[in-house]
Amino acid sequence: MLKVDEKNYKIKIMKNGPYIVSGGVPLYKMAIGTDDDGNSYQWCSKEEVPCGGTYALCRCGQSNDKPFCDGSHVKSGFDGTETASRNPYMDEAMETDGPTIKLLDVWPLCDHSRFCMRAGGIRKLVSESDNPEARKIAVEEAESCPSGRLVLVDKETGEKVEPEFEPSIVMVHDPNKDCEGPIWVRGGIPIESEDGHTYEIRNRVTLCQCGKSENKPFCDGSHWMSPEKKKEWRAKWE
Ligand code: FES
Image (tube, rainbow, N blue to C red; front, side, top):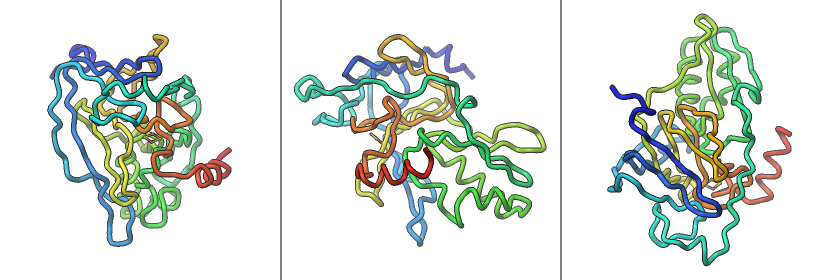
């Protein structure tokens, strides 16, 4: 199997403009599925989106040809300034320790897909991870987190627990919030900033497609959260 770098997959962020995706990265649409209690539970409705070898994805949220760019960023005067930390994930991660697994968390990366809230929430599950059922649900929740905010470490092996992904891009739909979500980048595709910096290459990250994130290029949940709600949520962590 070819490695990602042999395929020349790449996402280049254009100044106040779109994401240019090159190398023929497969593009899909997927939706967040919920359980009977309304908690995010699984990924569903996978659908391939026809695209060429190189394509431009909208980053300002204004395109009439989504997910593709139609040049609307120019007319709307989109400010796409990248403000996210460029430090490696491990330099910023907070830890929650449990009996068999440890949770790593970089909260500014949260895209608010809400997979970590089922069954009492991932922190509680990690603290009860000597119970196999609690551990199983904690792993499901962390692996479903599209942004890679949450990562579990198996304490026996010291290895991170990561899902395997075909290098690909998914346009996320969030039916519960009745909106489009972020651009889910999977499988270690390099992302280069407007000024030529390559962000840490990770198995999963979520890029902002609505243009409203305060942590560009990454999604921060602004596609559905009001500024007041976001402020309230951030106060819990800052
Ligand atoms: S897509 Fe989530 S903040 Fe823009």
